[in-house]
Amino acid sequence: MKNVRVVVVGAGVIGVSTAVCIAEALPFCSVTLLADKFSPDTTSDGAAGILFAAKFPDIPLERQKRWFKDTFDHLLAVAQSQHSPEAGVMLSSGWQIFKEVPAERKPFWAESVIGFRFMTEEELKRFPDHKFGHAFTTLKCECSSYLPWLENRFRKAGGQVEQRTINSLQELSNSYDIIVNCSGLGSRTLVGDNQVYPVRGQVLKMEAPWLQHFIRDGDGKTYIYPGMHSVTVGGTRQEDDWRLDVDEGDTDSILKRCSRLEPSLSHGKVLSKWVGLRPSRRNPRVEKELVQLPGRRVPVVHNYGHGGWGVTLAWGTALDALGLVRQCLQEMQLQAKL
Ligand code: FAD
Image (cartoon, rainbow, N blue to C red; front, side):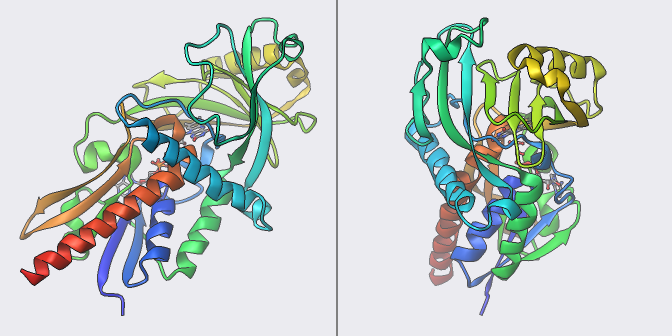
């Protein structure tokens, strides 16, 4: 019998991953995925979905490595299975290039991706503005396919789905025993966390099927990521910018910067333009707390604030959130015995 009621708020890549991990690992829990927006309308849906990351300043490196590796291994298994086209997950090889040699020449995730190495002088010749680079194979996870696929997996595990906007966690306190908060930028209002802020990103989808390798400038602002059906070309990183409309000045700048890296892009066709707000925070918040709501104290597990790396870290942080839900269950059992 399902006797513990868990609600996961948020149906972006963080919420859906967390809901699947809980529903599959804890069959005695009834799990509800509640959000105001589902795929294809979340921020996650528009993410380029390429797997690599920058370091967060205050999270132990071992924990960040685990988040990366757990996600990589999970998605690699999907990419190598029959589900790859339906789930939108594929291997992707290419280069990350730098105008100056970075202080840390080898990123912390170098051992998790496939075949990581420094680029040769010969390879760097085609990028005359750049001095140094990484060559490796990583994964691309296209959330507009991956989220519906994962939601289906959630339903198969007995999960329920509800579309609703909530204005405070109080609205959930009578209906659920444990609340899992994966509301991304929504956490600003939902739990009053002013440390979460938007970093605006604009990307273009282009038709350029001859491009097979990704190219990313190490500054994170200019990139070309070939995908299953189109090439994602970007981008911008505008802090505290809430504008969701397409800026044609940004479009021009993206096309100019990317064509300098890949001149053949001038023959590509722009299919669509998209803007999303990365739910950024100095460090992602993956922790639990007891929140006093009217009548009782409710365990809340937070999992939000992944910034520009939500797809890369989703499965790893979802597994941590599952561990925190298990701890809540143990504490509830202890309390019941007292
Ligand atoms: P979201 O996808 O925003 O989901 C939040 C959910 O919470 C939504 O379902 C929303 O409806 C719900 N919600 C919020 N408030 C409420 C409320 N009050 N009531 C009910 N529901 C609520 N990451 C990578 O790893 N690799 C990339 O290559 C990459 N490229 C990117 C490119 C761009 C242009 C952008 C903008 C982002 C990119 N990202 C990338 C980052 C990635 O998109 C985010 O880190 C990720 O989407 C965050 O997921 P999330 O589930 O936390 O948030």
